[in-house]
Image (tube, rainbow, N blue to C red; front, side):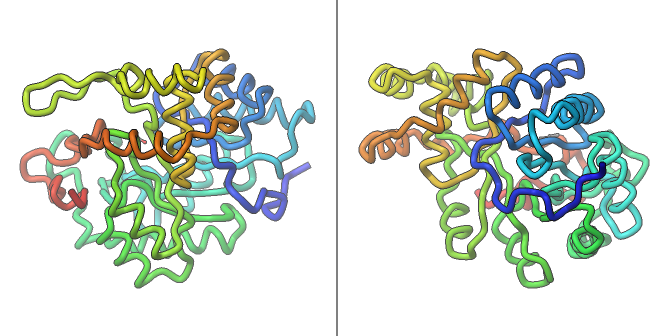
Length: 316
Ligand code: 1BO
C-alpha cells in the first residue's frame, strides 16, 4: 500500500542520522541498525549517491512493520544541477524512486549555488550558473509546488547565510522549515542562531562532531573536537563519550542535530545523547571553544572565474 503524505510525523525528530560519506555497502546496514536502536530521522541527499541503498533498507523496515511510515522523517536535498522550474520535479521524483517513498518529509535546496544541468561537479567556471541568472526564488517556487502536489511535506534550505535567508523570507509563499548548516563548538554561528530565533526558523546542525581533520588556525594545529581536552574532561564528568557531549550541546542549543556513524556501537552511543543533560556552566564552557572554523567552506564552488565567492557564501 502506498503511504500518504498526511501520514508523516508533524515534527522533526531532534536527532537524525546523517548519511553523507556513507559508502553504498555500509549505508543499508547502518539504516537498519539505526531503526532498531530508535532513530526515526534520516538525512539524505541525491549527491551522496547512496539513496538507492537507503531506499532498500527503509522499505525492508516498513515492509516488516518494524516502523510505520508515519513514524519516519526522511529529508533529502536538491543538488545544484537541478535548480530552476524545469528540473526540480524530475529531481525530486528520482529521489523518491531511489528511496522507494511517495513523499519526503523535508526537501532542501542543498546549496545556494547553481550548476548547468549536465554538470555534477564543475571543474571550470563556465559550468556554473550565477544566481543573478537563476534566482533562488525560481527554484523555491518550484519546490513550493512540490508541497502542493504532496511530493514533500516541508521544504527548506541548507548552507544559506543570513542575507540569503532574508531574501527568501521576503519572497517565499511557504516559509523554509529550516536551514541546515555546519554547527559544532568550533563553528557556533551565534548570529545565525539569533537570526533564526528572531524569525522563527529552525536550524539543523551537520558535522556536529567536527571532523577527523585537525583545524590549523594561524599555523597552530588544534585538536579534533572529540579529542579536545575540554570535551574529554566533560565526557569523564558525565560518564559519557565525547560524541555524546558534543551532540547534547547541540541539542541543548535547541538545534536539530544530524550525526553520522555506520558503527552500531557509535549509533547506540550517539542515540543516548538524548538522555544527557549538560549543566548551564558546562554549556558555557563549551561556548568558549568557538574558533569560527569551517570544515566545509565550499571553496570547491569558487574556482577562478566562478560567479561564486566565499565572501558571498558565508556571513563571516
Ligand atoms: C558536497 C557537500 C555535501 C554536504 O552535505
